[in-house]
Length: 462
Length: 118
Image (cartoon, rainbow over the protein chains, first blue to last red):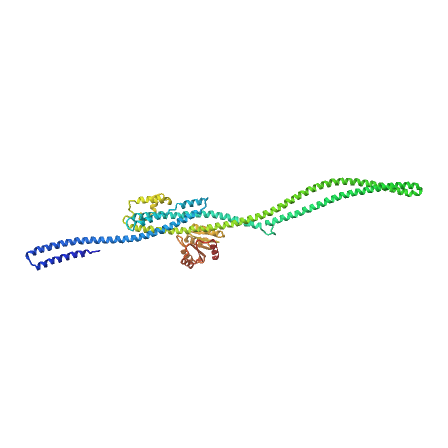
């Protein structure tokens, strides 16, 4: 209740005057001269006293008015502080949720990192240093109440904000460095995989070229197979001719034997003719002159027989020689022929095996190269997908920048709220709070001195 | 064929470069709109891939500057940004952008869009 100073003063004066008038009227009604002067004196004293009291009351009223104004001001400040505190608590809760989500994402990503990789080890160590401690402070604030001991916890939270902002900056920087390192490694693998894919496709093309093409392995294999088949035909022809020759040799031996038989027959005939010629000579001698013709004929016959026998003897000699040579030759030739046939047949078997193995190898190599080409294509696609997924680092970076801006605004709001509290930033434990924060969060942010943290604080708090 | 890749993120520039170089494009990079404008006369790109949120000069401002230049007014620009709001899309297209893609992008989509605008 506000009471105007002048109103109080006026009221006192008015009451005093009315009291004095009342006395005077009372005295007038009951005149008694010997009471007038003391009455007037009393009235005067009363008026003086009233005047002084009035002044004192006016001063009191003024003080009361000032106190009331002050109380109103403090009440309004407290109400404003309450509203701001509620918004700060809400912002802190949102920040806590965002930071918790970031922590969960980072920890989920950590679980999917490969085991044996220096880059993955670095990321794991980094993720393990994630802080994000706002919940305990928020709980403390909620239990404290709307007025009273807020300065210290508010100041504590405000001092932590630069650490969190700095940590978020380092999250962005470190994650960007890690992603760049990974992308360079994957790019290198992608290049090599691309080369492998191209070479595999070229090799596959060479393997599966058209039959008419001279460069295709299939064509070459087919040519080799045809060559082997042609060679086999030649060999078979050779073997057939060889077998025919063998039978001819045998037949020749048979003919030689038959010739010998004929010669024996001729010799027998010649011997018989000789005998006949002798008998004719004897008969011609008996006949006398008439038998002279017979004698000539006998002589000729005998000469013929002698020639025949001589010829037969020569032929026999030749045949014997031929037979001997033929036997030796045919024996050698047959032995060599049989050896060669054995070798050729062995080679044929090997060639057939080689042809089969060549055909199988060509099929295996074709399948292998197809598999390599397909694998290279799959690897390329997988690496491309991984590189695309690294876009999320940039998206996360932008979200972190939003959080940093958000924290900066929150820091400013806390500072604004805090300075309306009389003991804000003047706690005897200010230095201890600072030290506690540095010990708890300084390692994660890797701040090495108070000066660095001092530099991080908003200017108005320095 | 040269493509100018404008993005303040090193990671995004790397990813886009890998995608484009894989298809035989030459890629030059700028980390903000101001640098990109300075590079236009020397690099003579056939198209620009442009982010929106960048320091110094953002994508919208770059498009405005480009639209004022008779030499580069018709240069094909593909906007590639995390912000997919319709208002931003309309603003970019009104300023002359030929396409508007939202991150994260698919490599095939970017390459097809680039082929369409060239």
